[in-house]
Image (tube, rainbow, N blue to C red; front, side, top):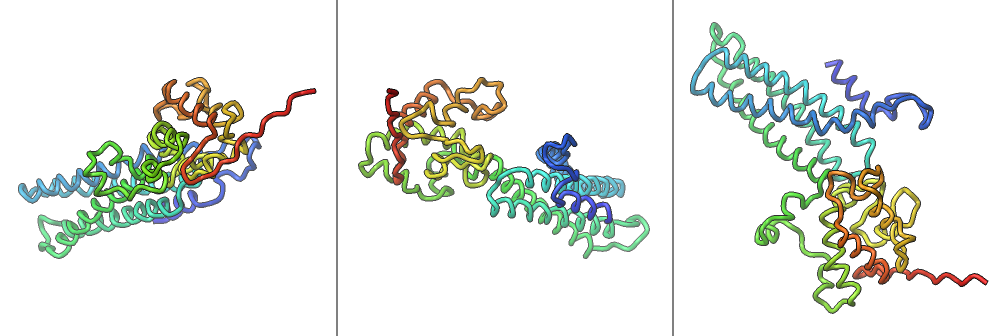
Length: 313
């Protein structure tokens, strides 16, 4: 397992290439990390395929079927290790909620360990199946671990989905009775909609917050803060991220970096939301501009109004 240790160590070092930013040497980690989202489908497919073939093997007991399962589990181990390494690279180059990220990482590593154990038990249980004595204990243990591994795959995938799409990704379009069962209680902002908030705050809750939740929260919410910008917390939503540019200047849309990013051409690298995430309609952009122009009111948060510019003498 030397190659596994080396791979994990490689993903965990501060830099894949000993070079300072801007030195001209290509940085492999930012390039390879996003492939985690592609490779992760392979171990899932191999494990599920092994499970289905094993079900068939219980009905048609053919030795060659167990040999095929051994191959599938071996490929699952290899691709799981690659997925873990790429995932560690991906996590080091992005801003995610530490708790959700740690859960996804731990479940992913547990899946790798269980896949290796599944392969070992299956190989020992069916080694020399034609000539050797049956090994019911090993075979039973193999199937228990295989089912546990599939359950962990589902949990790890769910945690990864939370990182990428937000925790309400699966339920945001669900029927109301499903949302009532699985979603948290409405926060102070939602409660303010029914407690006599100002017209500006109502406009935010009815027109602006819903589009922030559907088109911005997955990249700038509790689980993930791309560019260190978080839009669900009022103070941070107005201040901005690591660009050092004021995201929202109450009363002055033209001085708000958020408006500038929304109005960039669709092909621009900095346009928000980015390509593939669902761009805002002209009406939605105007809602944001109007909200800022009216003072960027958010229930429970007092924003400083823009200072008038003194006329030139």
